[in-house]
Length: 160
Image (cartoon, rainbow, N blue to C red; front, side, top):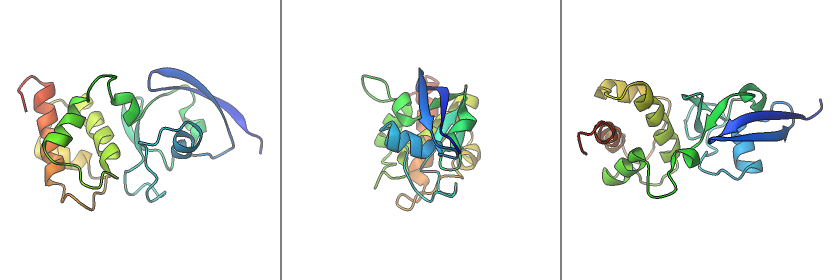
């Protein structure tokens, strides 16, 4: 099967890439485009380290063929990070000590962004559910849940 050109919006910019059939979005982002915040974990969609936003929805990029994002809007952690400083979710992860080894962090932050964009006032249970596709082996999850709640409060003008 021949390679093909796929066009989509990546972190706010239109891109055109040449990909082989069934190339995953995760492989494209890391190997061709150098966007390494999207991690390579299980390659089975179970760990969440490769989570990106596609049209605002959290998706595991390790299972997503690039052809499926043609014409779509893809956002990685690099696209969430402002030129100056940190996104409020990133700042909350630091403030609440929700980062240890850091491998799951980008996927957790992207999943939290999808949640807070759809539900700016989530309950603890809603946060837990939104992060349920992301595995962390270091933190025990409590600091991550607290960070997402603090980010929600900060983004809603309640302070952290």
